[in-house]
Length: 252
Image (tube, rainbow, N blue to C red; front, top):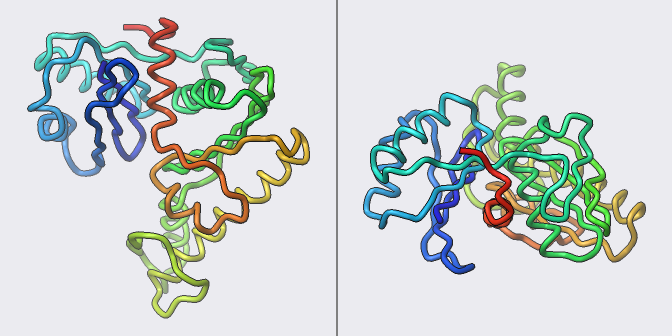
């Protein structure tokens, strides 16, 4: 089974076979067509038995995925749906379908990874934090700007700073000696401070036994700055997709 986590900035993928990932990768979507990126990433792969997708990037990209998969592999992808309850998790949202499918998949994977209460941090285009009670009830969550979004907002409203590129790797120290590093340090520490405070509140509410999981493309940059030390699972959403496919919680 080909598993696709289609985000606003990147597509993460893995081929799952008998509970193992036989190959994996990701590609950024900006400034290139999906078909070109998919050809480069998957053109030499064997045809999978099926394709399962968690897509938060909209209907236009879904049509492009459908067209590519149909043309290259003669398959119809199945798309993970968000339900009131599935795979041991009860959705907290008043309108369950409004919960992002990537968050739903991460909740399901977290439920299967940890038997007690769990807090899940996903550091992607946006930073999302969700909590699960020990009985699988989703307690709700929050959404904050991700690092790139914070950089863009700062650049847009401060003429002297202007657009700044992201800095590769984790920031070292607190104070910077150039603007790009100063911006990156600032937004990274802002994100880390917010996450630390939320985790402290969640532990106070749910107990010291609360598990913490962190995932997403910017997790590796933020994790070293945290006072708490969540377990880093970069495949959390993909694992949730695989579980939900097994529960037939998807639509063609």
